Structure formats: C-alpha cells, structure tokens
Length: 365
Image (cartoon, rainbow, N blue to C red):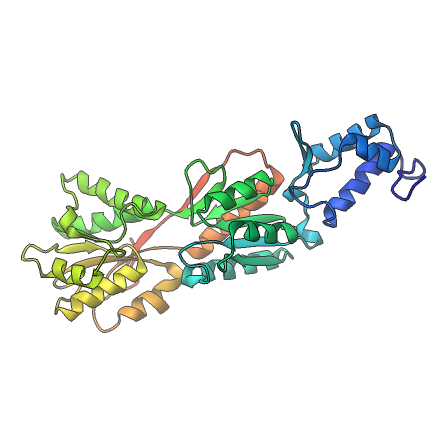
C-alpha cells in the first residue's frame, strides 16, 4: 500500500477515510479554491480504492459544500471550503482603474470597519488594492491566500467574473453592476437625491442646479434619478444649462458662469463631498453665501461629517448634507458574507443603507 492509500482500519469506511484526506488537503490549501480535483479514476489509483469508494467520498464533500461538480470538467474546490477559524483570511478588495494606488477616506473607513469586525470573530483580513496590476494578478493574490470570502469594492467585470467562476463567496460593497450575480451593499443614493431635492422644494426653490455626474456611475444615476423623480412631481426638472460636470473641461470656469447667470439657480445639488466643497468655495469667492444667497445640499458619511465635511466648510454657514453610515454598510456586508458562506445557493440581493439629511445644528430629518 502506498503512502497515499486509504486504510480500512480504525478510521472506518474507506470512503470516509478518503473524504477526510481530501478535506484536509482543501483545509491546508494543497487544493485551492477554483482548483479541480484529479479525476475519479486518478483518485482511485492514487489512493488504491474502488471507483465507487471515490464517488461516495466526493458526494460527501459536495454535500458539505466543499466541492462542486462541473459537467465535463470534474469536481471543483469551492473557496467557501476554506475555514476562517483555521487562518484562511477574509479579503477586502479595492480595485479601480482610475485610482490604482488610492484607498481614499471612504474606503479607508470601510477597511478599518472590516478589520474590527473580522478581528472580533478571530479572523484575519487581507486588504487588496489594484496597485496598477492586471486583474489576473489581483485574483491570483486572492487564490494564493486561500481567502474564505471576499468583499469586493469594484465594478471591474473581469474580476467579478473570475471570482464568480472560482466559486468564491463574495459580496460587493459600495458598488453594483447589473446582472453581476453578487449580493451588493450600497448607499441608498436614490433616497438621498430625493431627500435633498425635496428639501430645496420645501425652501421654495424652483430653479435648481446640479453639480456632479449624471450617468457616469451607478451612484450618479441613482442620485440624479431620485432628485428628478421628486422634482417631476412639481413639473420641474434640472435643465442642461444648470448642470456642471465635475469631469468636464474648465470646471472652475463652468461653476463661475453658472453662479453668475442673471437667472442662476437658487438651489444646487452637489451630492458628492468633493463637489460640495468646490461649489461652496466658488460661491464664497463670488460673494455668495450658502444659506443666504444660494442653498446647497451636499453629501457625506456620518463618520466624515464633523471632522471632514463641516470642518472643511468652516468660515460661514454649513449647508445640509445627505449622510449615511459606513459602519452600518460594513456590518451589513459582513453579515451577508457570513450568510453567503453558509448558504451559497441563496439568490443575490441588493441591500441599501438609508440616508438622512443632516444640518449643522446636528438636526437630522
């Protein structure tokens, strides 16, 4: 009998012994997530057992959710087979083409929250950024680390495809792609846009401007859509001449021209933190004070509001902002990933983290 052969002694049935051997190879990473097991014939020869014994062992592993039969390819190891209690890390993946080296304030807050939540469970967390690398390199880092699951802060369709093909338990966070097949936890951008526009209407504004993207991303479409929906109830809309694209040419000049119009908008939606700061700065430079000469509604996380939003706008009235909780987003993503590991056949869902308007006097509506 060879070293890899299965004993029928104290360990019980040969199928149980073979299942235990393969289970250990998966747990130690010898068989990684996405790998295919040797064929039933090869396993039978290697372990000196009958093909029926191999079939029973593979059925046991499949019932445990460790492997999956793939027609014409054999049996594939699922990444959920890796046990976080045994050291397989959870991964938070921030992959973007536009900012390959940058975590950014929001993503840094999410990383900190995920580190704390993983630590409270005794798990380790692997932080992965693109760092200018190809998608295949990022994915290979996940495979080599034997991650037990991934939180994907990316819209890259190729990376999503690779993760899905490997059977890796994953949840998208602050990102969503139509038809991606993953659970997703996002800011409720539609609700935020609706709340912001409703507040401007309540202040009597009828000429409303927009400083931000319109169709560049999922978030921009949702925020503009929420604002357009509530304005439409009053037979109003945001005309093209009242919109400024922050990625267009001569943005500073476009803002000055908008604010200098004789029929300029009396209220402006700037539903990104960076856009809020730039708009308020441009208005103040022209002698217009937000809250007095023009109303502005911004956007921030609850965690950013005091230290980064309100503080950056000191020196005058601070405009209201639609805020949402990073901690709540991280908690929802972590809980969904735990559920996904336990029940991989669940239908994917989108979870939205609610927004509310916050004012400088700490009032929230």
